[in-house]
Every structure is written in structure tokens, then in C-alpha cells.
Image 1 (cartoon, rainbow, N blue to C red):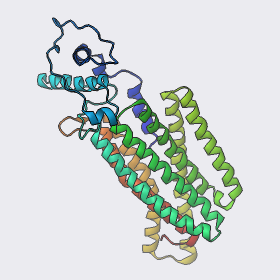
Image 2 (image 1 turned 45 degrees about the vertical axis):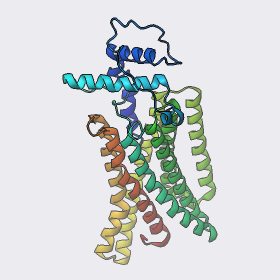
Image 3 (image 1 turned 90 degrees about the vertical axis):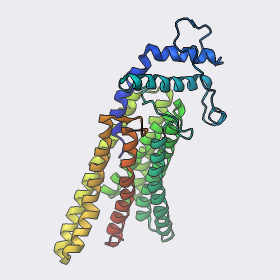
Image 4 (image 1 turned 135 degrees about the vertical axis):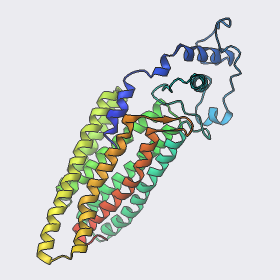
Length: 351
């Protein structure tokens, strides 16, 4: 349920950030690269008479950051100048500006975006929990030779694996923003979207009762995702990537609403046929009908934080980090819903 965020993110990617266009930022980087004699720098001459940063004691890149997080001299000069320029603007009361599509975060424990990375780890945990629970049920279903149950559970396992990979990629990306870590973050975010659509569509159309058809559908979805990644590997396009994820994100949401409606109709029929107690009926309505809709609503509201794009230099937190924090509970509740729904259609209970 991460997909619609791409619209918001890509609006910022399309154009250069205001901080990148500041002459004072370029002036600072030129001085830093010249003074530190950066090997991969294009600066071989500095007019010390007019450059305001010619006497700044620029720090050397910490050894651990240089060797383990790929901070070279030029990228470290870029980072140091973001901090210097930001402090200069703060002293004058000027507003904060973004650099390269990001707010000027300070490195905390060597991490480029500490809280976004921390909350990404927080999102990994619910998917790992879901994976362990689903694997236990899948093993039991396979041992009992129940092909239909295995189809549903295997699809949910795919969702949990995609989720773990996505949040691992997100953690790595926020740990250190590099072209490769950015692409992995985008690839696996797309993987969560399409795997969730695949799993819920299989459940809505009850392809678990037709294992061969379910297998064909799985191969089709796998081929679509593989071609999607191949297309981006050959020629990267933020616009295409956005459209792909938004399309499958909308389809995923439609499937969630359809499943909620199916469960509601089923509960209505069972209530009439078996005179279901009100307390039990209410519990099942929440778990099987309201909870999935609530997940969609909360996730969508969390995504809307990106529209405000606020940033606190004092607390080193921005809207993106708060968005990551806000998706931890929905990720946890997602597997509670999937398991409750699975138990309901296989055993008629929620647990």
C-alpha cells in the first residue's frame, strides 16, 4: 500500500532543488574540493581573493564512512557545504532549502537520514513477523496436501518477502543515498505493490480453487514485474516508474475494497442462516470488512504527509520519516487481516 506515494515523490524529482542553485553552495564546494585536493574533482584553480570559504577548515572524511558507506572527498564536501550554507541561512533567518531533493540532514552515527532508516527497520519487523506466521501455516498446508490453501498462503508469503526486501532497500537507501540504493528502493517498492495486487486478486477471484489458473496468473504477474525491472535497467524513467506503481496501486486498492464487500455479504448470509450472536458478528465485521478498509485509509493519509513536506533541523525529522513511522502499524495489521481472512474461508473462524 505504498504505491501512490510515487506521485508525490516524483514531483520533487522532476526539477532541481532550490539549494542546488545557490551560488554560495557552489562557491563552498569549489573551496572544499580545492583545499582538500579531492582526486575526483574538476576544481584545479581557486580565486582565494573572492571565495568566501578559502579559509574554512574543512574536515576530512571519517575513515569508516569512506570505506563502508562510499563517502568520497567530493560527496563529503557536498555534505559539509550543505551544513555550512544551512547554518548561514539559519543565522540570517532564511528558510531551509533542499539539496538534491532532500533536506540538509546531519549525519547521525554515520547515517545520512537516521530516522527514516530507523523507521524503515520498524517496517521490516511486521513483514518478518508475517513471514514466520505464514511459513508455519504453509508448511502445515503442504504437509496435509491442501493445494488450495497452499496457493493462498504462498502468495501471502511472497507479499511478506517483497515487504522485507522493500524495507531493507529503504533502510539502505536512507543509510546512504547512492544511485544503486535509490534504484533498489524503487524496484522493491514496486515489488510490494504488484505482489500485494497478485495475492489479493487471487483471493478475490478464488483462484486458490483453480490451482492451474492460479499458476498461470502468477507467471503473468512475475513476467510483468521482470519486464518492468528490465525496462528500468535499460532506460531509467521516473515517469514510467510512477505510472506503473500508481496503476497497480489503484488496482490493489480496488481488490481490497472488493474483498471487504465479499466478506460483508458472506457474513450477512451466515448471520441469517446460523443466527450469529451480535458480539461475534461485530468482531468479524471489523476483522474482515472494516479493518482492510481502515488500512487503506490510514496508509493513504500517511502518504499525504508528503504533501506538507515539513522539516525540523533541531529534531532531524521530516515528513518522509513520519510517513515511514505511520506505516508500521498498518503493516502489522495487514497480516492479522490476511490470517483472519484465511482462517475464515478455510475453517469459518478468525483464529
